[in-house]
Length: 210
Image (cartoon, rainbow, N blue to C red; front, side, top):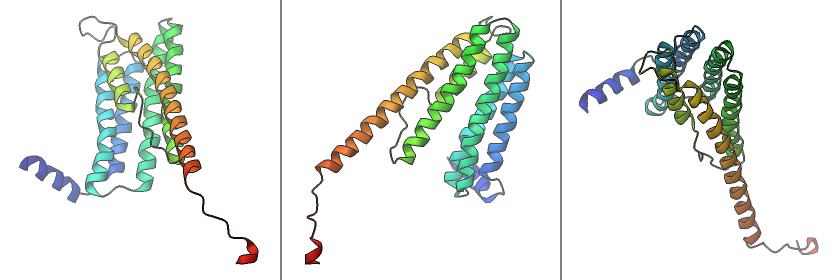
């Protein structure tokens, strides 16, 4: 505990910023996309895991260190979408190259689903509704895709072929998550409307009496 606290304090006192960690995550995901594009699934999976861990740490570091900014939060969310998109684009390319058009198309569905999962939460919170419900949150998608990449055909681990099943699972789960969030927001807004209707109304004073 003392060692971890010492490391944490040293990091906070350093010039390291959450934005710098976000950029490291971007570099890791770019490296993953290049490796996957070349068919090096295992190495791509490792790079993807490292980049995704950095994406997880930047937000936590921002909160702990007090160095977080509004722009940093915006940059973090934006880079998350970009990183997921470029990695899935590389995966789609490999499927298309091997003639698996359906799996390539499912990669597009996953990208769209991931964007909608993010958008529904952002739009809900803009309306004042907390919206973290759903199965396919960002960490869940990272875990599923990481397993698919590390255990892809030709990756060299147990001669498995889990990349396509991982993409199918992500496509289904993101679609379910979007529906879950839409339903959650609908119920929350309906409840808010019911509360407003049930609230006591202040009597209106006639203008002549003012």
